[in-house]
Image (cartoon, rainbow, N blue to C red):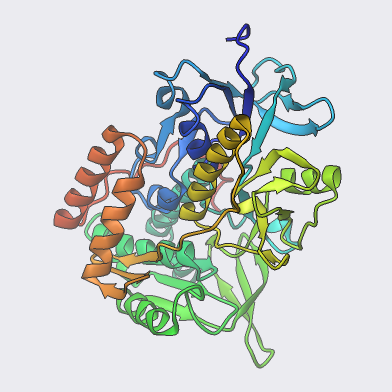
Length: 439
């Protein structure tokens, strides 16, 4: 492949945007290199189910090399992009997982889809005590902590300390936070009762803390209300207009609207509030003069390119797209946006190679989905607003359809079917426990 005279396209990131771009270039007359610091594509919308034992990690991830094994023009490299030399048209890499240092990778066209990560709003010290579920590794940490909390409560003789172990706080009531709180409630109330002798897992408290006045603010108020009601029926306490001011190993402090600060003893805190763009966005902004907003997103042109560099495109959660009127538009940070941008980027590369015009990117909104619990979800679709069982079925079909790999689709469907019938969860394993001793 190194002897090929085909144009070289480098795709940074194997998430939804990068994967779609590479897949839609696999039949083009180009040489594609996909760079990612992990060797798998992660179906991030289901990582919370790994964190609650509903799915195994291998069922929401798929090896990148397996995806492209039958694509001779696509090469996969495991490494992390640390910088760009836009004049020399090179991506500078650093090693990961103890691998040898990779050399710079040259390109004629560059597609950067670095994604995003959760923002702790200036409190990076909360990272260790309030893990998030955006990555597979952190989802496994959360799973260990949730299951460890029940085990610790079983051993604890002091009722106050036992209740702290049985209190779970989820910060942020967006889709991930709502789904996470609902899954913990189902775990405590449907799956675990009968497994323990000294405790009743149904007595656990699940608190969903949100700074705004409703859950799922990206949904219409009517669906937000139905989601909140469904959560309460599951046993989740929804705490609206409350802001987290402190988190440590012993609990959480929250500030109420009237200014009162409440201390909540809780040994398990999960973060699902706010996101920040990959640091690659800020670097591209420095190199090209493009605007970067407070969330770290770089502003790209209507064709997703960087100012003065039509050969460089940025996609996904790390960008804002300049609209027809010239003002930046922050599109929703959801998988459909990233996937549409990835497919568009591939078409744009092919158009430029053919010398044909590239039309501006246009996002086609296919709706928004969030599941609350067993047989209940909300769906804000272009043609309908659904809740309850119909929305849940829609959620199931959509997520199965977008999962990568037929094997994963079959395994996840079987897992969900088994869980629906038995209320069981086969992934309740505490492995490689890195936590400090119980206190």
